[in-house]
Amino acid sequence: MSASKSGSGLLLGIDVGTASSKGVLVTLAGEVLRSHVLPHGLSNPQPGHYEQDAEQVWWHDVQAICRELLSGEYSGDDVVSVALSAIGPCLLPLDAAGTPLRPGILYGLDARAGEQIAALETEIGAVQIMEFSGMALSSQAVGPKIRWLREQEPDIWAQTHTLTSASSYLTYRLTGRHVLNRHEASHFMPLYDPGTGEWDARYEQHVGPVSLLPALGWSDELAGHVTEAASALTGLRAGTPVAVGAVDALSEALSVGVTRPGDLMIMYGSTTFFILVQDAPTPSETLWTVGGAYAGQFNLAAGMSTTGNLTGWFQRELAPGSSYGELFAAASQIPAGADGLLMLPYFSGERTPINDPQARGVVAGLTLAHTRDHLFRAVLEGVGYGVRHNLETFTELGSALRRVVAVGGGAQTDTWLQIVSDISGVVQEVPATTIGASYGDAFLAGLAAGKLHRDDLDTWVKPGRTIRPDPSKAALYDHLFGLYKTLYTQTRALVHELAAGPG
Image (cartoon, rainbow, N blue to C red; front, side, top):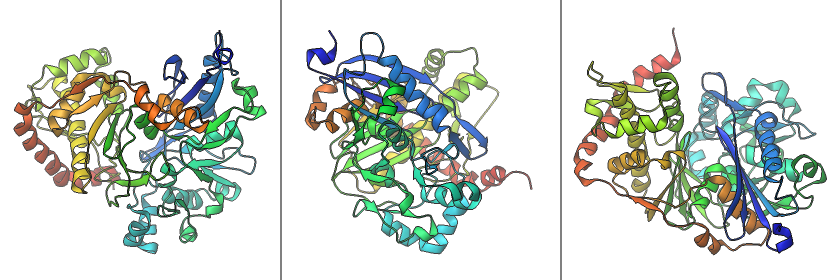
């Protein structure tokens, strides 16, 4: 018997991530009935530029996942609400017909707007931007990328009617309405006022008109309903409610029950993302002060640029015949400290807390006695030091970490989590099932349609395992973490010169 005939209904959540997209069909009780994953690529047209095609990647995947999940046993008639999340904050210009004018410019991984950041800090003032936005400009900020688009691609700028992000573009394709969640809108600085939660035109002459930006909403609010055109392409029933949705990391936090002040999510994905739930904003020059999923909530967020994509690079380039399981198993046999190897994992620059797009990977201490397994252990530890660097920045800002919850592909193996806990000294909870952002999307869909209450998430998320730090390693890792920070400061000038290229 279909869900619609039984009177319960199903929730559809879809997340479009950096390396793949995933969709789930979920009951109102949180049971996953079907799921589907589609891998996709990432374009790197020149150093520091990262893009994806909004139609051929983002919207293509949403249509394909819908058609796959709504075939056979289930149909669009069974779905009572939909929510989408995606990578972000991204920048996508649309023409008057709502058609993308170029590939989407990605989040902080894309560091093309350095000159525009410098110009905005000169014209407006770095202190003024910090005081207004609650955080400093970085590669994560969309405002400088809007200015980059205006200055570097004037023909496209002249045709631009709407400036949107990945999640809001997908919601638009389903509903015909442009609505952006406030978490991502916070990164459209300095065009967003965190005090009012609305767009603000005071600095638009330095960036671009706020009239080009979408309407704003909270992630659990209703954005609109599936149109007839979207129904024909996806199999969803026309009129199905669609939530405002979220950036992928925020939905990932919801998927593991990170919703109360003091809850911190560490998402081990292609990059690593941190979201701390707060009931009041914490201004920061190094982290990101942004809106939360629910009205009245704030997040103190952070992000590393290179984690899962670093292990992927290692496997592809240095261990092409080995599986991840083999690499992690071998790394677990290498002693803490990798026998004197130390790595900076800044292979794509770095976001928080150093906010240095010109940072690069560094390996120190190599000898002829070191093996590939030592190098992979150093990769995992390098990421661990980066996690600790962010966690210490949270606490230095006075933020209390009530509990830490791990999620993402990197949380599937205890080896990496144990290394991170040993380095950082924190306990990490891993729920019994870590499905990912699409599961959080399904929950948002239920909230937006009035089918669920926020407390229902407590029954959706089941307790799992706990990773505790090994106190016998604390002294060694405290020492090596100090060397990690020193290695960055003492090689920074040299690495920047190398990043600039010859001449």
